[in-house]
View 1 (cartoon, rainbow, N blue to C red):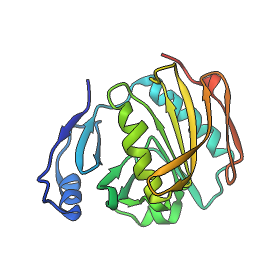
View 2: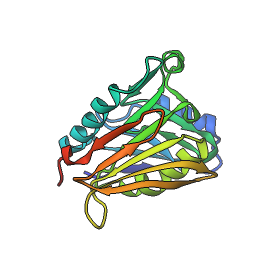
View 3: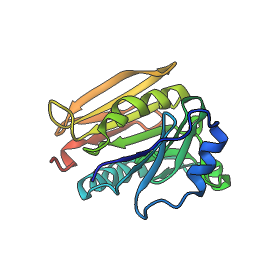
View 4: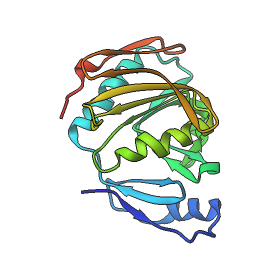
Length: 194
């Protein structure tokens, strides 16, 4: 199953778009995001996708301080890019997330992690990093199971405008290191390949 897009009136403002996103009844188990002003409904991720996210999350728990938490279904808002995005993992302040009703400003995130799915890999490679960089999220880890040259993990940082600098890129099987405040090495050999 592939992603479905729901186009909105181009004159609709951000608040109306968010209200529609919040109030509409979407298919159970699906992931519903606003990407560049378009509501995108994706099927639940496959098992291998979930295993990769779980392994990264498990490693992050060993280094994340008590004032931060790792979230799997937290929506983060980037109004300037007409984005309401749900990364596979978000590391953000616990207190801000407890107080939020449906989403937090993306700028509060310290790290976002995306694991590509075949149906929407382009979003994780192009649209989402531009939004994350625009929001000033310090680190973006892209685990691309469907990369053209084979599965890779790429760490982006130092956002400027809507562009990140690539800090590190490895093929599955090699370790990738996250800098401070995480100071963590993730062994991609633990990831199931397709």
